[in-house]
View 1 (cartoon, one colour):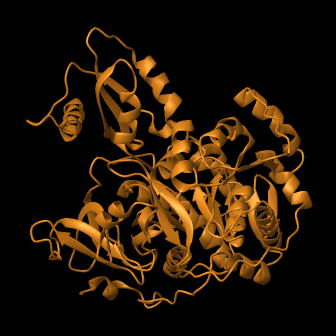
View 2 (cartoon, helix red, strand yellow):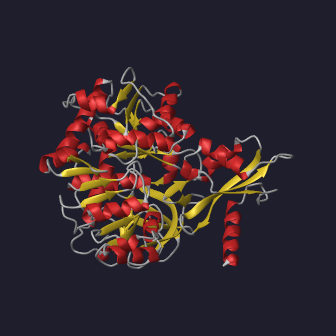
View 3 (cartoon, helix red, strand yellow):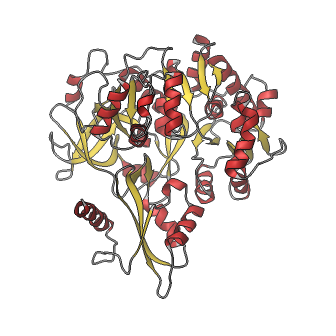
Length: 560
């Protein structure tokens, strides 16, 4: 096949890189050996060296094995960005388990589905989430709950003040005992041994992670990513950033580690390269600006909404952001004006990457220090092939011909967990069909002109309408509902629900919103509701979602 993009590569980036036959946890062991005293994690003033990170990961791995974890068992990690999230990730891999990344924002319905589907027997979570998680014991295969608190890894006196702040903000203090099937993270670190039972010979083709992703139809699917998949993508990332120095960079970790984008570009890249991770548990524009000025991170993966929020902060000019050298923007399209503005205030380089959970996740990106094209997602990474499949012929499209983007490479998933039909529908021989519509120009730069049908990208989150619709359909007053992504100047898109009520029923926006919040993570809850007498449909009764989106676009155009 033709690979015109290779002609664009600078001499510092090889066309092919070697992917070691290792397990992911071996990179932590190597970092602890090469950089034992170097800071691995900075968290709100508390620091852990690579040696300490490795020792604590071994302790938790030993504890998991002592409680019955076998090779291939699934362990849910339901944590925000904090040291415990990193320790938990590597401990599961060291013990031979499979990580199941779980969004801390999940409500009971979503959590129950994921735990049931993955068959997870352990979960590692926050004390604040324990009331929600403990209900899962009777509904799923869950056998053990390991509980930690943000204060466990805060420096003095923040660790003493945190419970007071928690009580004020959340109106609750959760008291949990270290007994039975409930285990306290802090107690484990105090008493657990560091020696683990050697896991039987592992292959780099063994599954390391189940990364749940939605689909334009149906329930979320567990993407099976192997050790090799994730190692390959992380090494590609390191190769792309060829000016970054091993053991010398610091990484600002705002992108959630439970998201595959944060897992690769923050967590795995930092450990593989011996970088310092500066973790923040949630995004706050003021706190982020203060952190950049004080701790001087050089690398800053983010999403467009993060960069937009910082640029719109009233005091941005008061902060020195010149330490930033590289930003990979992902999760949503990056507006050119935002790229240019952020480069101006930081002096660094911001490039848009493209990928999906099924590819660990990155497949394409623009060059940091070499030729970039505005509006393009860049070119395929080393070891990665990409084509456009023509909608007209079904074969490989000509340059500038529109079709479906497909990719293949060592970062492409093994398949969907227990979903053979969905796997076969997504894979065409060894090509991963992305569902995204685009084209490639003569020089090998790729462009996206439309996204996966129906999927909403709001604030960097992938949101799938059917899941929201199913929740709203369960409301006793709802007859019909359709959910769509409508244009939003800040979030890119926002979620809107169009509702037809049953005859003689009345309802308020507040009522619908309260109901949605009980059953959906906050980022999935519709921001806009519209009650209608009827919805546009085809002759066979299918609701025309696209017609509603076009209607909203027309409204905005007329308003301007």
